[in-house]
Image (cartoon, rainbow, N blue to C red; front, side):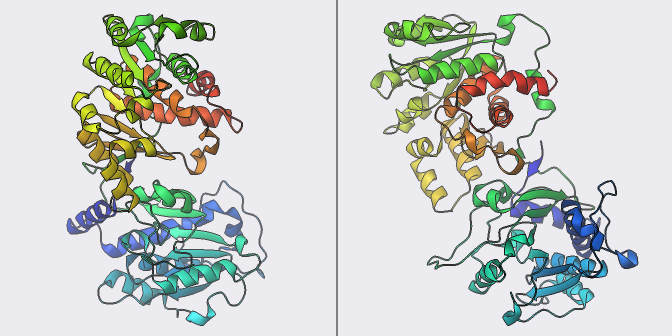
Length: 535
């Protein structure tokens, strides 16, 4: 799985490469600018016909995609916004290469690079042009391309009001401004690299405080802000450009959840049903069984060898008439659950969906955790401990997984939720601290799902860009996720890997089904997902 870095981690790996003599800052800057131009030409083939590449200075995109012919009289226009630091230096490289390729290029500079940014200063001088005046921003013909090279990953505060005004002016200066192709270098300016939040002044008035990109070109590895919060929505499509001499492998880097060799264990190749585990879903009273039934179907579809749904005796008939392959067991109270868990073949249990918020829920959680099986706690099993989260933390163990959404997370970790809301910490930091405090894996749900282990490992699964599934925001989808996770624990996956796989499969199933999805559809489309994976 790919690494996702913070701003400090990225700076450290770049400086390590420079310090070791493997590369210079100017070489990195030149490579970054070349990568941006190549990505632009690859993203929009219509720009290739107007790119001459005279002098051999500019990179050429792959030849297999034919370019649309552009008349030489329709000279392409680009406006590059440059900051005073290294991100601006990348922008000057882009400006020079586009100009060498036959574009008409204008540059607006917030400030010229000074002595504190010698590499950026060198690129400014190599470009050799003159920045456009403030008053001319938005005047004249509409550019075909707008490049944001103002701040990138170096921003820790709101963009200056002058920049916000430029962003606003560029959105409204032309009637057809929506036709401008918008590119961010490294990260849309105004977005925090580590939290994905849009940085705004304490007393923000009306104004756009972040760049909205169609394409973001980053370097070496993605950054947290590409997948968290507003940053994931503002960056558009993300392209990562390798940098020469910069090593991969940061010890405490966050991982990006992607399909890969780690998930090959999901492919059933041999064995009987008990080799693939027995999951127990604990359901609630009559009339509240739908969530548990969906979780049970999900556990079965994800590959658990057997799945049982345990519920109060008075709810058995209601559940049994709607389930066939899932076994329904009457479990009355803690004694019934304890008796069921005497069967050592039951190796994973899920509590929460439809369970209710009564005192019995807390007692059932206690019994389940005492059995030391893989345990998923979701929904009511979490909210029941709102008044005494420490009581829950004292019972948890390393085979348990908590799956809160933002509201449930705030009930268990109110201090972390408040710091997250105020932008003091990132969602990754909040989830890591929660996992350490709870002593178990925590899966914090959302479009930007974060998974953390007590030992500090963390991963992000972001349902954005090509993996966006807005139709997954439907009642019951979280119950299905809990069931998938329980089924994967039953199959023997360790909690962190099971949580990562469940998050990925959950979104992949939604992608396979498409708009119109309801929660009941998710388990039924898993066979198609597995077929598409070659299982």
